[in-house]
Image 1: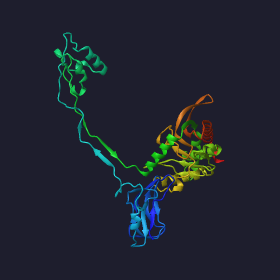
Image 2 (image 1 turned 180 degrees about the horizontal axis):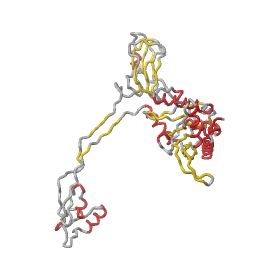
Image 3 (image 1 turned 180 degrees about the vertical axis):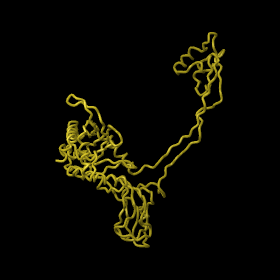
Image 4 (image 1 turned 60 degrees about the horizontal axis):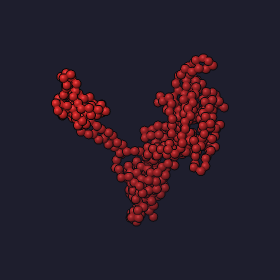
Length: 424
């Protein structure tokens, strides 16, 4: 008997998927374990595994098409089996599918025809009426209106007696009609040259990942009452420790690895920050899973270093590099980008000194990390140069209060300024 294959839910936030390509075609014999297609989710491009033995009888959505979770995408059965009943009952019609696409979406460029900005380059002259002493003749009302509009009277041609400027002359005057202006002394007219250019734009389809980023972060920003706490941290000792470790070890440790380790240790000492708002209750997580935001072509994804407080610096370094590479190649599996209890967003490598981040649900907090910068500070009454890094903690005020967030940052500062404590 024919069986329906539906779009599976491949991540906790997935609502629809895009069929990137079919690896099997109608008429192919398939067995359990075969890969039917590649599916783009909101997080990554993943392989769709088959669990039914038989012949692929029907493909419900072509490559490039989008369907919601649970919609029919294929039918598998015995060769020659009648599947018309399944199709007639609507089992093969997606509840919410986009128009089928037979090729990858292409950028759409629209260009207008050349347009002249100036109405005309033909010189125009106006007869300006003057009194014997050189003043422009205009009615009091016309003068008042011109002053309110910021129009010089010597630009307006009068239509009243003797070239006198009246109300209607000011009200109907437009600068475009005054391409040339002649002074009272008979100075030559100056023409505004025509400016010709083209207008163009580009439109590209929104990816599944970008759709989810837009929805989730909008929900977070407009639902969770954010507040922000900023602190400066002296990174001299981290810089020295990193230099020593990297000089002797096979594993190269980054500043971000120190931050991940220090955040995990700080969460262990401040467990109320390691929490989530669930509406009618607050979840205080006993495990510490630190999400590390990674920028990829389609947007932002957050691989998760699980049980980060129990891992060494070298373990964290290797795992973060591996997860980042998989993220950029869209090879992350759901268990590698789900379950975060706290998130770090580091833009220091881009030269950003300080910023605020939107909380990444379901976390109660996110740490925005800026770049380290040599700065003159005062220590024990003496000026010295130190490497300073600014961090900003975004907090969900429904869960974390100012004092709790501040205590967390104080712990983080102590650990990073004395990184030997991270080795204990």
